[in-house]
Amino acid sequence: MSNAVDRIPTVDFAPFLSGDAAGRAATVAALGDTFQRYGFVSLVGHGLPPEVVQGAFDAAQEFFARPEEEKRLVQDKRNNRGFVPMFDSQLAGQKPSGHEAFSIGHPDRPDDPELLALPFYSPTPWPELPGFRERIEPCYRAMFGLGEAILRACALHLGAPEDFFAEMSRQTYSNMRVIHYPPQEAVAETSEFGVSAHVDRGLITLLIQDMNGGLSVQTPEGDWLPVVPDPKAVVINVGRLLRHWTNGRYPAALHRVINSSGRERYSMPLFVHPSFHTVIDPQALVGEAPAKPDYAPIVAGESVYAGFQRDRVSWKQPEAAGAM
Image (cartoon, rainbow, N blue to C red; front, side, top):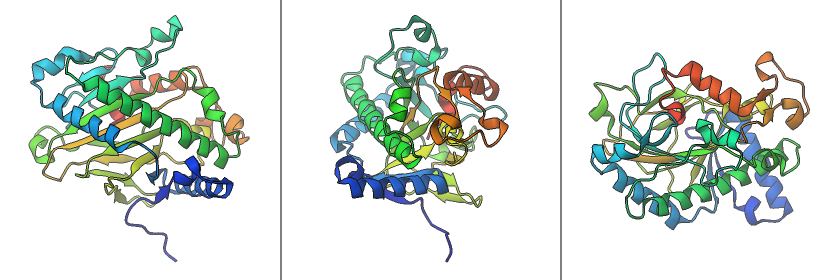
């Protein structure tokens, strides 16, 4: 029987959140199997409040409709926070990405002065737009809570204690981006993609998106599979750190965005990271020696920072490689 599919698989997460032991076990198996095959999943039954999600999308549209000079008042290039102008995100050797964004750090910053000095823990410069922060921040918190639940399920699938990732993420530097993609034809002279093919750097990414589509993921066979929008779903994908920690068991798939809908597209990815000093070692998670040199123990934040330094043209907008 062929394993070909026309879209990434869908998993119902509700039994894990509220079901009995059998329902939780079945969900863990389905989620883990999908991650092992594709590194991507469309998750329904996730429990995100629809009014919180809609409020965040409304706030995003209001912000990006503001004049450019007003949006640039909340731009912090050095620390990758606040407004990211159109074409300002660029991977080395590629054309600029055809999107603008607003980058948000975790609302709860650590007390450690050493961590606070790092760009990953910089505060978010919120705009003076009534209701913007009040609608975006609850969406961040709801998505981050879901991310913690997904990682609990992953830990169980991998044979680790359910709280394995929670213990590693007390001082997370997770960040969220609110993104606006004009129609591709409007940016075609400057950019080929809303964002070009890339792999996210964190543990997992959670994505909520409007119904205009444009995201696609590369399958293990090398084909590009559209991620068809579903108003009831959150798209989840594996990042490099989780691939590393699982000794390659969970792949981190290439994905890209081309907004060919002819309409404005909005999306909100949340990139879930552990604490900066967390050691990523397959032996600790899956009880295996590194399968290859690339999976030798690393320090999470140091590795992510070094990767951005290598791959980016400059340290202007380091998280842009993770836009979806």
